[in-house]
Image (cartoon, rainbow, N blue to C red):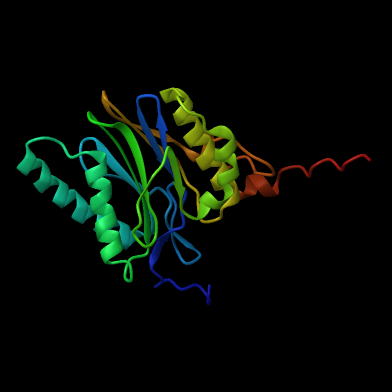
Length: 234
């Protein structure tokens, strides 16, 4: 405990994902927010609404990503009033890019923008550290993303259904949680399409278990009292 810096900035060592499918987009994230080695919030919501049809996934510094999303939400509200119609996903992503780039020396946040509009359908934009902008069929970010690049190269395919896309996102986040100590908690998803927005919640004890992961327990005593594994016969 002596070496634990409780005054360290809140960091969302994170797994965030955005995936396009045939008709819209699916965004997903874990829920662990940490301060150094201390888990400050185990059930945070890293998928933030900008407009009725555009959401963002936040990674990096919690404070930085929140202030960027607050500013962009305000500007998009003004934009919608002036034009008399909802902002497009591209406009929202470019506002995120503008703020991130103009303040790149002070911000430590990577953001994925996803949404649906009547002009271009479902779109995903990645805005990593430094404020560049990349339109992609899928985007992954945060500390857990380094475990997922090969998985997405193999698993993502064009023209997925809504169900396939959401299953892919939940599986990917659970894989990252298994390997990345800074990712954990629950999995949240947001599905955005022409019908509107659907939010889903997957508790940690319902996620698939991967290699050498322990079953969820109610008490540490359950683990201590468990029988030892059988020795391997060679």
